[in-house]
Image (tube, rainbow, N blue to C red; front, side, top):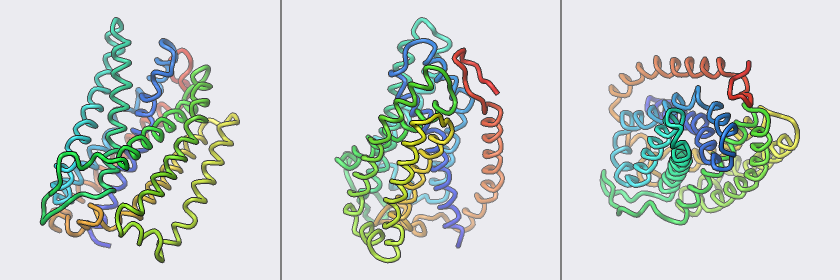
Length: 333
């Protein structure tokens, strides 16, 4: 264990926290056109209004941490993925503007609702494409990106983009099951039952394709000790998917969301196994990309203070607004 590994863990934690916390509100945006205009849309908005903006803190920590702790990786990844990363940021900006203005400009609310949906969809799809492009490999010569403008675009990156859309939509649906009541609650439960098979199919397709993208992936998954994880992973996914399907058919509210998070956790664990210890698969390891030891140590002091502080105020916000949102749009404790 050294500071480079510590920083890799911090950034991985930030990315995972972002996926968990911003994933469900992006998912609600993806599902937004399926909600009737009026009370259900307002109720869905109020289910995320107290927390959605703070959720993006983790994206800032992940991106900023990558720049500070692994500057070489940042310098290679950014030019390789300019297009999807720019699309993601524009989608997040447009979604945020639409979220705020739909309350303040009622005369054009349908346009702001459309903007909220499109911003959420574009941001999610771009995140999935970014992940797929990183997994399929980035051409590196020396210490610089050596590929072309469109190298990120491939059938695999489009598959990961569509898979993340399905995953976030399921997260959003299960969050609404937990946090709302009435007609929106029942609609979200129906959406979740339709989305679960789609997500499982997507996980299966991505898992089947990934080992053949890079020789090291195949080695890590199908040689010992990787086999110790490869064998039980499909069984765990199937078990959690079965439990989730059962809970969606019954009157459970919180468990579907938690079980969906478990599916995401398994997927992220598989991603970690595939990539470790590379930050750019097959090209650059975390040690090759790391900042000097003194820089890592200096930044770690700030992280030790700020990360617990962020966790504390995030937990407090979720606790204060822990109740359901009623059909009148107000939180109930």
